[in-house]
Length: 177
Image 1 (tube, rainbow, N blue to C red):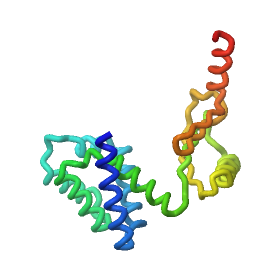
Image 2: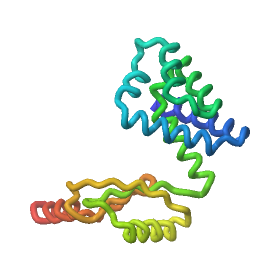
Image 3: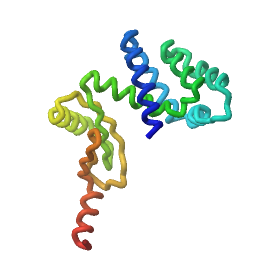
């Protein structure tokens, strides 16, 4: 719980500064690049999470890996490292993106499907959800063969499970009690 509170304070402060300086889009892009690097390159996450590594080494690495980042992003990352708060970076990135979507009247919807969604189906789901919520929908789609068929949609803290796996589970429960 404490980590979420800390991450919220940092994300809010950075978002307000970014708005003030007109750098929201630039910082958002920097965070997308950084998030991708953390997810796809385990060494980046290991370095950031390593409490033994001195801050100067972490800052030098970040500067070498991301020389084109906005100066505000660079300063923010250095501040996190100096304050030993870099472990909160994934949460801060997610909260910053959430604030940006909120400000733009957008909503993130996570869709999990047994197979890859074809273009028309993906567009149809996005359109329906947009009409239901009254917001522009950004979809994060991933495949999960364990679902067997159908989809699972997460909108905020609600889950709509239309998967075959869930239907079989419910059938089993109704038979066996």
